[in-house]
Length: 194
Image (cartoon, rainbow, N blue to C red; front, top):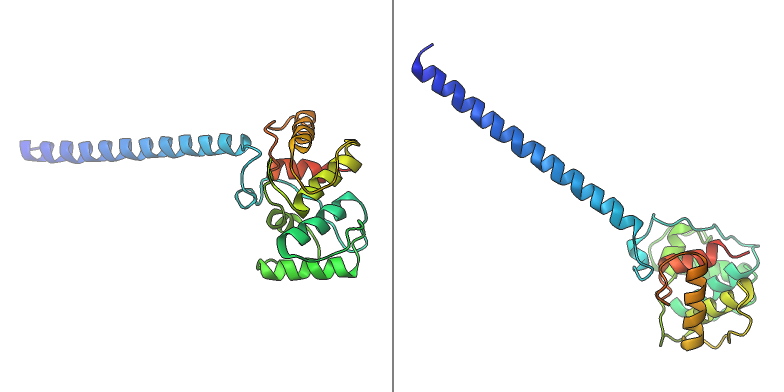
């Protein structure tokens, strides 16, 4: 084999080696990024926007005929999000189902009148000290009735007493204790409600 052929073969081998090294480095970087992404997903703070956690949390399916605090939360949230004007009675009746369908259509969701994972993630909103309205009432009512915070007033004002109750609830369920009701806190309120 001539000197020129050896140099050509060595040059091709060097290019292949460099390309392989780049490929494996990129693969390792991608794996590292995937590992970091997985860790970040596990450590999502309670303040993350609902739209950032569409599939990360498991939500209960609530349908017409259901009763209880989950329905109270849905009714308050529908009033908050679209002024549904529902009587908050904890009964998922015809009017609540109609309001759910209207909400689902407005947010381009599957319109079936049932509140499942997709509807929950669009229905909830982040609440913190200073927030006001029906969504705050949903949290206060749920904490008061389902979780035993009997002295908490359901007034729709997220003040110091509501913040203390939220922090206590978060500590009880071992989630980020920050006094903010984000997707994870909403999820624990709704899922563990008895």
